[in-house]
Length: 304
Image (cartoon, rainbow, N blue to C red):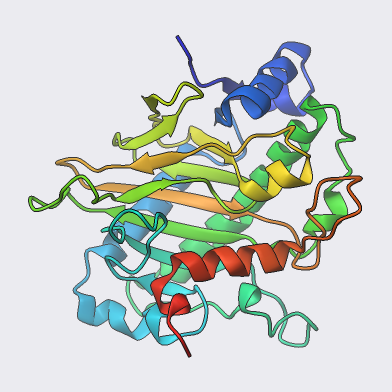
């Protein structure tokens, strides 16, 4: 029976041989793992989840001032049915709130949409402080994890360090309400997809919902309590490592319980070449993400 490898962050940082073999298995064979004993505490996770929950429970009129549909980027609130990750399914019925790694206004890259200014709601009052503080801490854990994974598959562990000096890191709050009574087979909280970037560090409130597709095509539920992180790898990292690390399909169908999850999508600097190492080809990380965002966010896919 296939299980998702459970990785202790302290053992990973120490490069414990048994841990590194489990990491290699997670990266090459499964595409998912869970991470325990990291620098992010359960209390920090519970705080950010509660903060997102308070925002999502506000009336739509309070969220409208930060509606990302009014922007040319993916910053702020995404209303239900504003994303469609699978063109063969209906738009996803979840709500989201996106914020990203911020650059100084005088940085040459500050005008790029992948570094767009964040939009912060007026309520809850502590929203920006809690969410921004969590994002900073999560980026550190994601970088530790990436270095461990890179080492586990036989690459120099510092070989990607310089590609993450200005990471296109996106923190998201996902709100999955109870599955609508009218939902059919083409309706999902989020339909089957692979993540677009490198490493996803996912915190959840403990409610079940996430399913991972195994190599035989079956779906395996993956659940984690607050403070245990679900880690998966995206299309960009699979390309960059020439297939050493696998991106894996996953989905959320939804249930009779609402669910909050908080993924950090950890991606390299905009101008990083993420074509397979040694291939002689060029695929800029920013170009790849922009293409995938325009395919997913409905307000970005509309003609100007």
